[in-house]
Image (cartoon, rainbow, N blue to C red; front, side, top):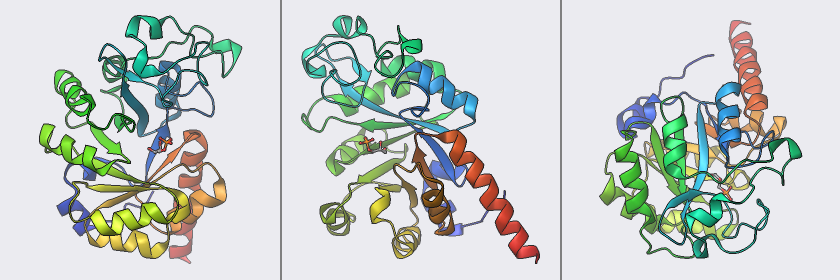
Length: 273
Ligand code: G3P
């Protein structure tokens, strides 16, 4: 694979220069093949050769940091109710695998600590701080404390759609990189244009629908990386690689890695002819 030197990025985005370009983030783990946000999906991402996993962190009723995307357990477990109303003990009784396939029966909702412990020395971890309905809660402080406890300050990146959460995280762990998630639609792009000077972030994580070559260039000129979500189709992956994005979030790391390899081969062949 051809490595493209980019001096601006190397200087400005801190620890992120250690990530490969493009970085393949397994979105909620290898979630095309295993139940999202479970240890099974994260382990599979390791096996498939992803460079990083992405997960969703939030607080449960007794203040533990757990890994689950939705605000309720209804879609991904055999239980019901809001995560924020259920204590860890109750969450641990739920089955988080069978909704995906019977062969995953017995998978549990993991804690952030468990994922950091089992995956953190092998892959980078993108921790999305999903306290969107409780933006002033203790999630940034607690997630930062866990990262410190596991000594993974140089192996994680925090992301959030809420830019103020990123600023709070900067106070907790100033050197750990942060990715600002930009939602599709005009609101996302506008909030980025208006607020970017005030928000701590070393990477922009836009929805794929709003990315254009001009966007990528503008963000690169600021010395920031561009990690695009959530990209599962071959043609879309190829297009983003042509536009020189720095990483993609995908449910299917196996497919994305294959496309990256073929794309690099095609480019090398083009340059030789
Ligand atoms: O971090 C990328 C992606 O996960 C953001 O969207 O809805 O999957 O949290 P969502």
